[in-house]
Length: 380
Image (cartoon, rainbow, N blue to C red; front, side):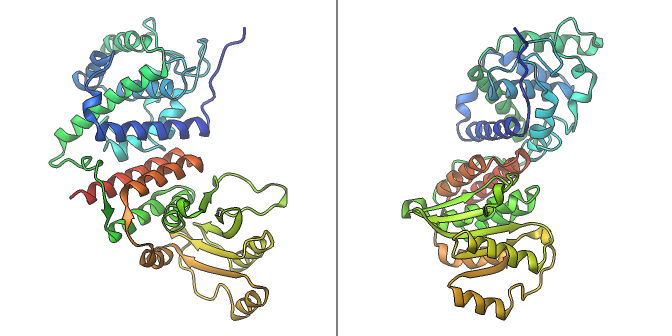
């Protein structure tokens, strides 16, 4: 029988990022649930009783990998390990937790030590964690402790429980390190101040990578105006999905029932007037009577007159509409008509959009952190 190897790709990392953020939110909301786990002693030893920097990242990554996919061998470190269920732990760590994923620096405020590439350190250079690994005397006890503890984790549920306690300890360390608790307030309910909601949307749009932040912010905003309970659907498509077969697909499409309502093109880099007009014609040709080109912070300074008076006359003649607007202008305009903004509604729709659109780990984490800041500020 061939050896099972787990592929750690963008889909795996995105799933892991959503899971990690979900557990962190639950730890902040219900800390009493996470006061212990089956490997509590090992986690306390790694996080509290030692001063090493690489090992906490390794422990967190191995637990997250197993929590994400139960087939993962929790002791395997590299995909070239001979263990069944080998996988690339370094990819998960750097794309979700440390360097590119930014969960540890942005959410945990660097509490683990701010190491960008912990799997480059010698303890993680072997194909798997094993007591036979040749490590320095300073790392011997911690390696043996890790192997014993992780060997006892056999299911995803056990890994999630242990990861929850790991984050619970991190939360306590944050509370001790900060003069005021910045993670409390996540259980706030009710309506949010519109100015605070605007700050949230702008933060999401600015911090997201490769235009994904802009896409998520616009989708969240429109989901408050075009509500599911009123028969509308706001469909944000993954940013890396190509348009196949020459068929038009907007970055974001609005439907009322089965009827096409509007298509939006979302651009967070420089563009030309010809690109706007060409995309608008594609949208109209695909049956969307309304089209909006929204540009974000990465587009730079954009002048007026993207659509000329002649363009608007042509639109009037064929019964369609197209416009081009900056992100902040769109936000300011729609906040006048949206009314009240319910926190639970925003939280639920934001998380759903991140999942449905397969948003990359980096943007998912920064969006969730902006959401926590919004909720915390509403509880003051």
